[in-house]
Amino acid sequence: MKLKTLRAIFATLATQISSNGLVVDGDVRIHPVLSFLDSILRGIGQVMLQNNSFAGLIFLIGIFFNSILFGWAVVLGTAASTATALLLGVNRSHVRAGLFGFNGALVAIALLYFLEPNILTWIYVVLAAACTTIILAAVLNLLAIWKVPALTAPFVFTTLFFVMACARFGRLHSTGVLPTAGLPKAATVEGIVTFSTITEGLFNGIAQIFFQSNAISGAIFAIGLLISSRKACCAGLLGSFTGLLVAWAMGAAEPAIRSGAFGFNSALTAIALGSVFFVLDTVSATYALLAVIITAVMFAAISAALEPLGMPALTSPFVLVVWLFVLASPLFPRLRVSIL
Image (tube, rainbow, N blue to C red; front, top):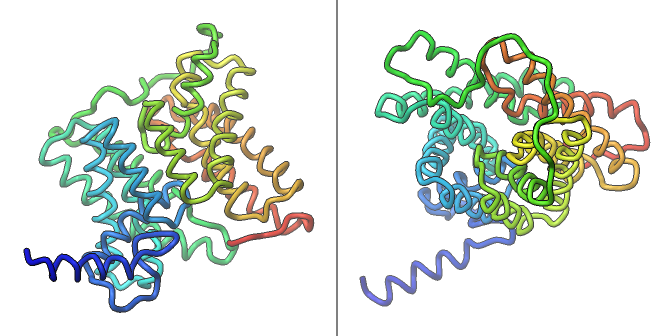
């Protein structure tokens, strides 16, 4: 390739770099491939409510660090849901912001976490990711009257339906990590919580947002959050830590605390209410803290409720708690809404 051509490429890229992503919003001169790539990265970033392609890239690096399979799953799922939105003519600004990509990202990684990978599974992943775009549009229309965000509800619905359907599909096989179906049993305190438990649990709580049981991946995700928003990073870490403390105080099993099982929903709730939807002050911080604590309890409750079906809670505690606290907020005049 000629030197002049290389210089032209780098010059084009330089003019399209912005403070919050790879591509400047509203630039009609952006190459379609570069724009699509930016949308994919923003979609990955939106998993933690960050409209930032640099954050999405760091999240992707963290996933690939733990698992190449899951890394490609996230790319494929985000691309499939984003492409479906473009094909159906969704508002370009919404697509570019990654709003139609993050549910596809989570569905893809969830299906390859719960199902054995083969050619049919990958096709199943693309189909499910495309479905999240339809479900997201439906949920947005349904909730618009109450000004409630859809969050990861399409991911939860799609994953539960597509995983349960496998009970009737003989060519799709479980990886064995789904909860064992059966009536909920009384829990007992298991193991001793140590400093190592708390440290690993803190970062695993961030990592589990992308189904990664790896504290280093969680630390990489935290760096991605920090690049996008210091407030979001602090909220995510405090949310994960609070969920961990609630689980410890209530006598949850040490392995569950260490794995971050009680942290990832709480981390998402903290990011949403503590750094995105409300102006941060003493009142909103207290409000968010209460929501984070309830999220950890809600995770235990929903996990127990779904145990007879052998299905996971996923991010349903985060979705339900944020919906509840957002719906309640208009009656609390001391709460100042940021964006909804």
